[in-house]
Length: 151
Ligand SMILES: NC(=O)c1ccc[n+]([C@@H]2O[C@H](COP(=O)([O-])OP(=O)(O)OC[C@H]3O[C@@H](n4cnc5c(N)ncnc54)[C@H](OP(=O)(O)O)[C@@H]3O)[C@@H](O)[C@H]2O)c1
Image (tube, rainbow, N blue to C red; front, top):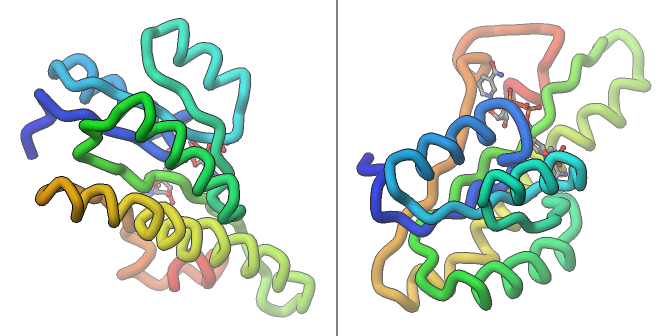
């Protein structure tokens, strides 16, 4: 994928892989916005020159508000990376694992779908665009401590 000449939003770009990917896009010449919940990380990224947006992907109204703000500032947005995710351990012998399962599905699966649904009309409307989603090797190799994450 050509990382240059893009206008890209990395949702889940406040740490880890997303933060470094945002820097890669920027270094290659793209215009980059970053979304997440961590206000301190967002402030640091704003100082680096990124557009920054608060968003909680488990909250549809937060995603819609972020979408509106991002598109007002970047009407030429052509790429959305859905990097946000949690990696929670679960012990299936303890029914209390359900809360971790719920958080995992709400963030990693439904959160991704919320973000994609929010930006699909914009990308369809401009006639072209790219979504970059994220998976894990744990989807392919059994890893009992993270069953919902694997699913
Ligand atoms: N690390 C690995 O070995 C690995 C391997 C394969 C795939 N992955 C996947 O790659 C992605 C990034 O992993 P990482 O290791 O870089 O993790 P990380 O450092 O923990 O980053 C996770 C990112 O997701 C964001 N996030 C979490 N919950 C969110 C929410 N409710 N709303 C908005 N943003 C949320 C966090 O931002 P805030 O805290 O600011 O909200 C953060 O930017 C994850 O989806 C992970 O499952 C990781």
